[in-house]
Length: 465
Image 1 (cartoon, rainbow, N blue to C red):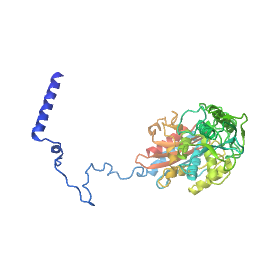
Image 2: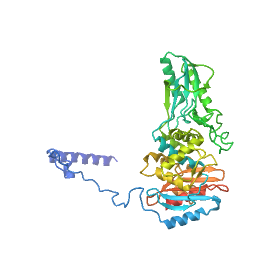
Image 3: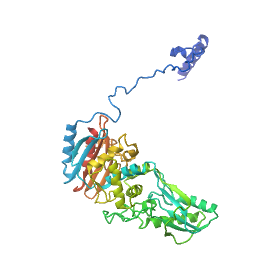
Image 4: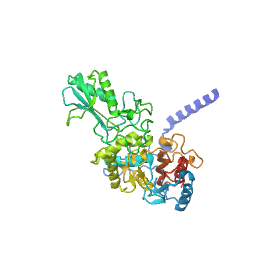
């Protein structure tokens, strides 16, 4: 080792001496002009000499990314038809595959049959919300001046992700009840107010708090909370646990807000009751949700029933309908009609918990195709929010895309799942082996036991095509 180091040192010294005695420079290696010689500047208005770089690596590719050749229809039809014959799917199945670029239907079997969609309903709800409200809309929770001096009103803005005092940081970043209390307390102190009476206004949403098609166990089991415009932690008594859900989310959130004001030096009268905020009342504090596109991604990835129901009502408000289950369903249908999806969409709720919902595979696949198309960039969050096979959301729980005929497509399929008793659905998009983006919907609502592995196999066939 010592000998090697000595030799290297000698070589370095020799090279240095040579460079000094022979005017050695880097230009000798690059064949460029000597740096000591001035270079002529290009004349004003003329183009400089272009820099020559490596040739375009992708120049020989025949198509753009995502726009490869269509798969062979005969092969795709044969493979899908064979898989659809699996008895696990039960007695009623609908299936469709659509080319996202052209809208051409590549495969169809009962594509226009209205099927119970379960949670794939959220695709329609979220697409309507993005189209109606816009991807940058935010949901605001406010505190305003009450009708009497020293009175304040907490106004629910229909944001069920509003974080309560015990909530942990999450994505998307949630509006915080503690932040709202801090801002409100600061405003009150600046006005010289140290004691208030507090009421709450949850009148933004109206009508029933439970859909007619919901089963009695949904709320006790923690599937969803009663729908109110003022809710924190999606109505959970403890945000760490799915259940129990609180029976009156608005009162629960208002009581928590009163305690938060007290911790910030604002005494609150014992009785906290509902009241209508005065029109045009001065705002004392405000917090805003994440933008709608992030809320949509959250709703689809986590299959958040509470957020879906809130979005349904916000679409109703934006479209001039009552903020009820019925008004939301009518508003969503009107928006989908504007998007060109007018048939075979009948909703009873926004989350898909209702067994009364009916959507055709064709309508679902078209909605996903719009989200993946260049013509509707505002709907893109529907595509980006879908779970990724084997990685995220309801496709990342270690139970999907695990069989021999589907595990090879892990990471290649993005899709929303739907599960109720005797109902299994899957709708999403994938890129074929030649780079073509295809949209699919596979739906079965008379499933004997469990058809999820078959749905995964169907999606994998599309991805391999």
